[in-house]
Image (cartoon, rainbow, N blue to C red; front, top):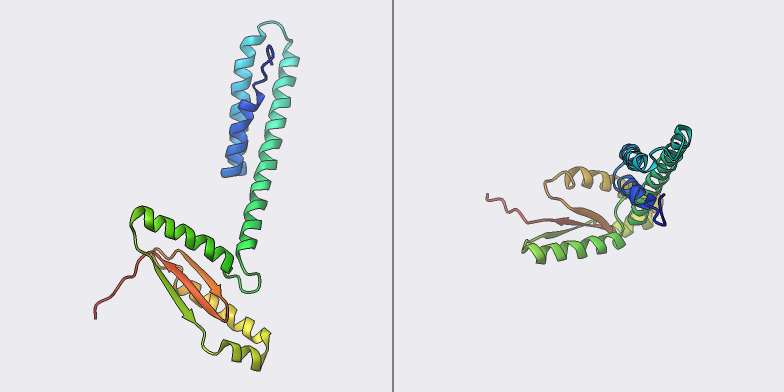
Length: 185
């Protein structure tokens, strides 16, 4: 640091961004590059004012700090993604929740207006689902829901453009599709 300006945040900012949006490996590489750039720039300012050991301590401490920051930010990012997925998914069935459906539907509506593109909603109902729960118990209803969910995911989500599937109340599923494709007979 020279004068009253500390430029360390300028060098660590790319580390934080690459660790959050990239991966642990990208954070490590950006850390190494940032310390290299910092070392080259600072080396020119030191011209004889510091011993080689002081320079190495400076670079080593910055490298350790940047690498630690990269690891911490990466793990926070991973934890955040896991928590978002948990909040958006029904824990019993593994299907998107109604709350996440509302968020996604709002996004689809905005994109539809912006790009003047159509989309489709498909609602598939499980007939007599309440009767199954009442007669055979909720554990049987849960097994049925999981079975249907696995088959719906295999059938619908691999389709080109299938955006989203969510389980609705009373045993129904709602699918967001970009367009309706009518097939002629």
